[in-house]
Image (cartoon, rainbow, N blue to C red; front, side):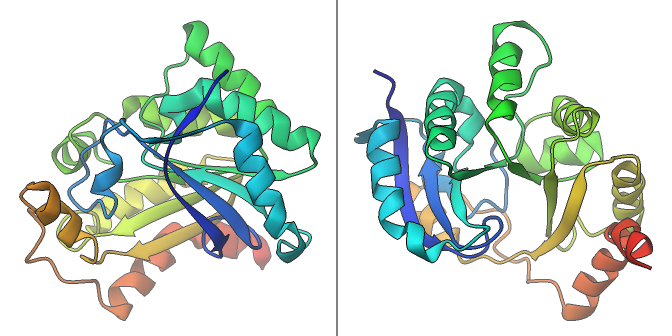
Length: 248
């Protein structure tokens, strides 16, 4: 029996997909993003192991609050590291008529072999993906997250090819992800996609820094301030231009 390695549960999520969401945070992540506010999810070990049916039974207690758009969202950590569990969970969720969303940074993606076959199947049970683009520039991405981004961009391109709806999320970190040239390059990339329903600019904050201290890990962005309203609006102007143009 497949069990998911769970970090925590949020029963009334309002920012993790459409409507009210039952959010399942899974353990494990191979990225080491300098601005991560969930560093306590990096370690894949969990004492909270649950089956798909156990989680779905709990989720359905809140179904009356979901409305027409709500459902479950699986976040992390990086949920795609537990792809076998995700397959079981989403397959059973669809049997119950539950809307399914994955919140991912795409790092485990590779477009071949057994893993990719599982990913293809998983997409048939997935309604929407929330995809984090940490940084479009390859070198800056490596400095910011500790991993390359070529496979991540390949995943986003594949999702466009199969017309799988995505919301793109960009954390705006002053000095790291707010350079106009990088945002312009990212905007040009997004313009080539056919499946982006929404682009969200998430202002950087350091509210998760205490977790780094608790884990004994140096927090290298402690002197970085949150972006101003003007900086956020400028990033929105650059990255959200395609959606605005289509609305006109």
